[in-house]
Length: 239
Image (cartoon, rainbow, N blue to C red; front, side, top):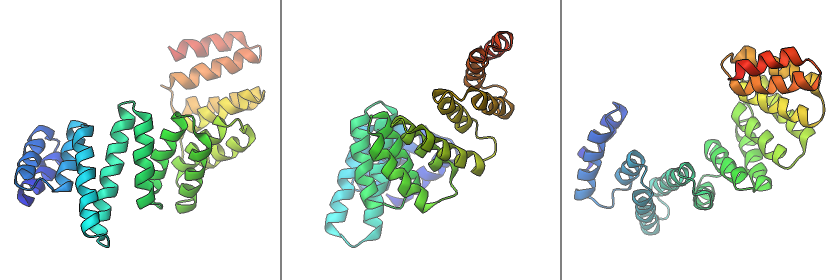
């Protein structure tokens, strides 16, 4: 079973997912409780049924060996992957529930906390998202993405001045962070600070001259400032 599993991993890394899936299936035919194989097969197929079965098998392993870190790690992995498949396939309530269970096992996993927070924001649960993102920032203060997502959670609660601080922190930590600049400009727009918003949009289009969203936002700001000809030019570049 392990030989097929290891070969499946190599094939998956070699961008041969169909061949990898065949070996994961063969591995499971020999050892149906091999959680790692079921997780990888579920990921290749984007199949929540396989991943849910992996969660069940991992829970059984943890029950048998509650002090075994490998068993807990497998359960956390299965929950993380199942949660993300639910999210990608639009099942937000299931995604949140599953990622919350994973976070209980891995409270210091900043990537997991960011994924959980995004699902919470999309579910209209911004205060909970903020809580998890502050934990992520505490774990890795210099990760720009955590500051960016924290800004999104705070913005969703209409605390715009605070959101500005998070977006600025994200921009400071990562050069060319176009999404953070666009969101910062959007917040400045809401506060009526059009000149400042335009300046940030200018930086965003310099970062990414292909960003339709940045050119469109820039056009809105130029229009608000009475610079109609420049606004039209910016809108045309957004198409």
